[in-house]
Image 1: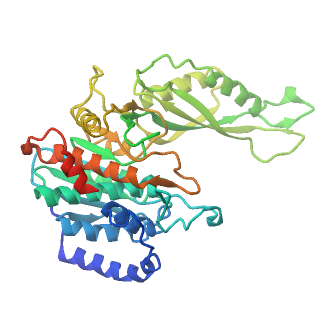
Image 2: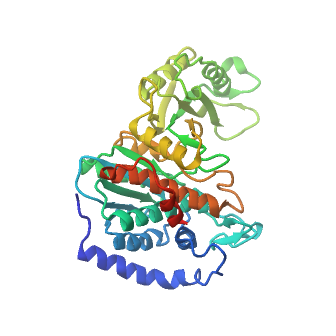
Image 3: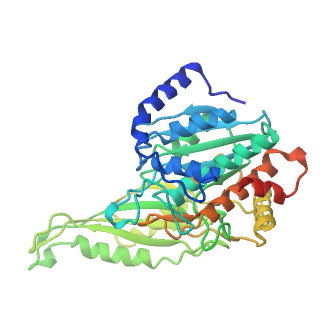
Length: 434
């Protein structure tokens, strides 16, 4: 197993933590409540107190790294520009490697006067925990940490390797976060059998929905060229907006014949139209169109670009086409639609604890799972209920946070300690986590 620890790295982190201490003190002294004895609530309280608005981590990962070291994790910090990335690992050398992927950055709180409580101070009210990022996704990070802490306490160093991957660049551009972590791991020739992403996947109750894949996404820019002229003499000009209108209609009429079970259909949405500076009596000579395609695994990027080009060239050859923000689709169900081993493990643990089978979903936008899917055989998303993410008064319940910790405990117990031959987590173990 690669050991990322070094005296120099430890000294740098310690110095940084000393600098951060005064900034973090203002968030201490939070009133005790009936749930203060829960370790997972205490860890969540610490995490949300860091005002880590994307991409500024504000010391959150440095604090967590210090806690991880006490469990025996090796730590590697991968800063890129103003983005903080953390790679941590624990366990014995083995062919099987498992990971947890998350992000410590949060979206801005907006007008704090609209909140019932300070968004960067965990507040318990009527059984709910209020704070920016408690759902998306510091609560899941706290649940993961406490689950692994309990496992190491109960059973010692994991028999298999476990990796924790965190970034402060998920809510923003996502250019220097998990994407860079994946590049680093590729260079180290590290791959995973299974990665659990802590994104808030649940809809009404914890674990009622698992994200088992995501559609891909690709953004396009078309620059169309016509001929300018006076609006009174259209026969002497070629209106680029009119040309754009025809092309827009043609692109929107694409049938997308290739389908994929369990995925929403491929869709195309225009996001911007620009014909340059506006002058009331001039026919525009150019027009730029921007659009985004969300596509199923039945397509690849080359096919999309070719289909778009063929559609445009039925109307004009005088154009330029570029693409950006590529996000490839992924799906962790086997080709014969049977669940992968990791999916079966997760579903079995959910059924054992919650007594229901989760819905498998591929709906929604892209997530950082798209990057880690390049080096992970299977990628699943399991987190808190997503009803209040990115909203004023973002919150979860104490019960849900504890439930997520218990699920993570049971899932990683199965994965990391296979020689225990335990097929489900016992009730006594779950009670100890409370």
